[in-house]
Length: 292
Image (cartoon, rainbow, N blue to C red; front, side, top):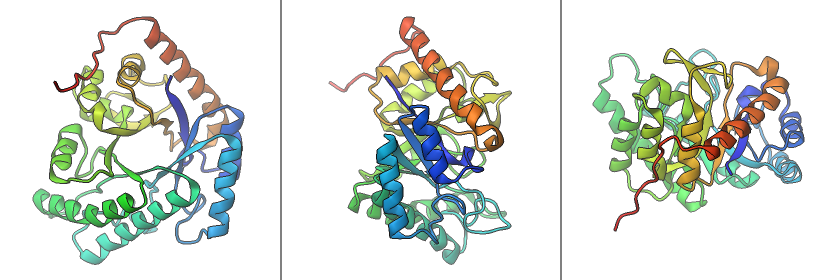
């Protein structure tokens, strides 16, 4: 059985305490906490507040993941900037420091995974230079993660320097770190990969440490509520089930905070029904073969 959670960027109109209470009431297994101005602002949150949040999570039975995709966390005018691929060293360092703080927060609240992405290439900067920046910038982040026994779930994000699974495989080949794993967004597969999407997932499932879930239509990246797009989730869930995935599968609906209570309830029901269907019949999904 898979374990489901919900990311707080889709609960932006709730306090974090309210979000924890709501997900606990609906018997979710986990919560993805997006570090943002209204939820565990990494620049403002105190040790005492972190200890209180950890206690609330334990009482609600929610396993946390730290998610770092807040749109304007570091700059009020530029979305997702600066990043690990920004061309100025000082800009990259701001993002590195943000991730180092995220790792500290993860340890304080009992999260074993921090999810992050590469960033968007700045205008006029060669892709090879961006990739060099990325590898160099990840080094201190992964070192800190290893020291705190935290996994980094690196997420390919449409439109960013690393946006698809082929590019993820390149990055994985460039970096040797026990802390580095893959965050795979099932909705992104329908944007950046070729069908059948469950085969794309199967090819990387051994790397997966964190999963995000949203729907997609016409290969447009917009995080639709589950069932409002075109994705067949049953074979994707079957890949995770049959290959022993043990992490959380987190619903990410960052554009729908205004109807969060309804979607919190509906999303879990949708996923449990899809998982049941994936168990009832075979969709031709294979397991990853172990090396002999």
